Amino acid sequence: MKKKLTLGIVVAMLMILGICACGSPQVQSSSDAPSAQSDASAAASDQPINWSPDTDCSMCHATEHSSLTDAAYLLANGHSDMQCTECHTDTGTLTDVHSKVTASDTKGAKRLKKTEVAKETCLSCHEADYTPEATASVTALTDSEGTTVNPHDLPTTSPDHETILCADCHTMHSTDTVEESAQSTCLGCHHAGVYECGTCHD
Ligand code: HEC
Ligand code: HEC
Ligand code: HEC
Ligand code: HEC
Ligand code: HEC
Ligand code: HEC
Image 1: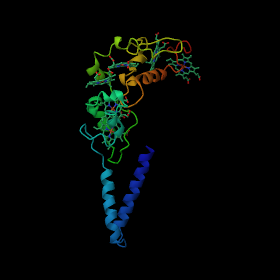
Image 2: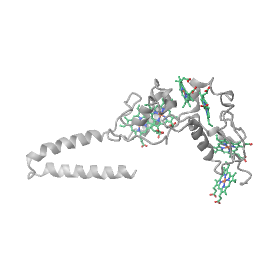
Image 3: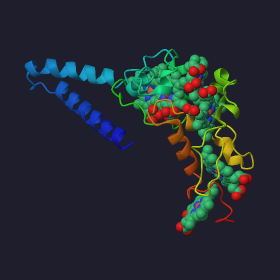
Image 4: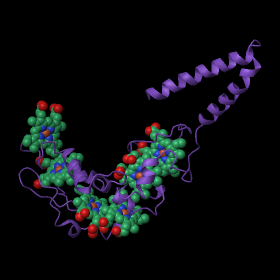
């Protein structure tokens, strides 16, 4: 936010300077040409990119792009043939998110703020894999009292558990292991490292 405001001010100042330069006959013509050129390229990189699912994503989301083929990102690597928009399906919101993005905004995004990758998207290919049996022997989710929870069979007693997405554990563009991501997902609410609340809170 702050950055954008600053950029806006700089752009506004450049525009004012540009107008002054044009209106002023004293300006040397030798310095006019390059300044007109840099004004033009500044204007081009300042234009919204007019995002669509066919836009080349890699120039701004380099990490996510390389994660699909880099062996360090084992999970994303299993999805290397996929188009970005097969998981990032919310075209309407993504068009909105990119509506003010310009060609010079190549830093991309650090996390999903306005969209999510829904369970249904993952299940459309993995229905048969998402079974309690697939994770029956996983012990990574064991709390300080020794309670072990099967990650594909979370207790249904808390509606909060329904908000947990596949990707909260199976991150796509991170090198964290599924066990690490799963544990930190639980800790997000079970902050005391115990899979209960009522023993300490009403
Ligand atoms: C010119 C640079 C650029 C291009 C090209 C681009 N993006 Fe982005 N993208 C951004 C920036 C900058 C943000 C952060 C916007 C913000 O938070 O205001 C972003 C945000 C996102 C987000 C986060 C959405 C959320 O939930 O907050 C996703 C997902 C995303 N882009 C996917 C894509 C995909 C897929 C493509 C290609 C079809 C693409 N982007 C092309 C710059 C770009
Ligand atoms: C278009 C189909 C498709 C979608 C959508 C998809 N995947 Fe996959 N996924 C695959 C394929 C193909 C593989 C590699 C082959 C395999 O091991 O099943 C794979 C591999 C995996 C693996 C590793 C499986 C193993 O045996 O080690 C996991 C975990 C996984 N995907 C989770 C997800 C999650 C979570 C999502 C949603 C964020 C998702 N997938 C979306 C097709 C898909
Ligand atoms: C609470 C964390 C968590 C959630 C939520 C979760 N998983 Fe898993 N999943 C795991 C763990 C842990 C494993 C075991 C990984 C291993 O053995 O390497 C696993 C294994 C898998 C596998 C590989 C299965 C195999 O046969 O090897 C797939 C595919 C998968 N999950 C898909 C999904 C999908 C799809 C969803 C959402 C509907 C989902 N998972 C939700 C933690 C989770
Ligand atoms: C198999 C599904 C899948 C594919 C394919 C995929 N993504 Fe993602 N993406 C996710 C998930 C899930 C997240 C949430 C964070 C995570 O899991 O790492 C995410 C997060 C993001 C974010 C937020 C920043 C971040 O790294 O967390 C951006 C930007 C993004 N993806 C862009 C892309 C682009 C660009 C491509 C294509 C080069 C792509 N994604 C391909 C599933 C996918
Ligand atoms: C969004 C918040 C949230 C997240 C994330 C979360 N939980 Fe919970 N969990 C709760 C709440 C709230 C309860 C209800 C506690 C109660 O009723 O006393 C609960 C209860 C439980 C219980 C006790 C259920 C029962 O009735 O016996 C277990 C076990 C548990 N969670 C395990 C987990 C595990 C494992 C994870 C990580 C995969 C996890 N939870 C993630 C909020 C959450
Ligand atoms: C082992 C005991 C213990 C367990 C179990 C526990 N908490 Fe806490 N919780 C605490 C303590 C101690 C604090 C700090 C209280 C304070 O600073 O006023 C706290 C603080 C909080 C706060 C912040 C409250 C505030 O007023 O700032 C929230 C919200 C909270 N816990 C929710 C939960 C939820 C939800 C669960 C279960 C998913 C849970 N806690 C499980 C002991 C526990």
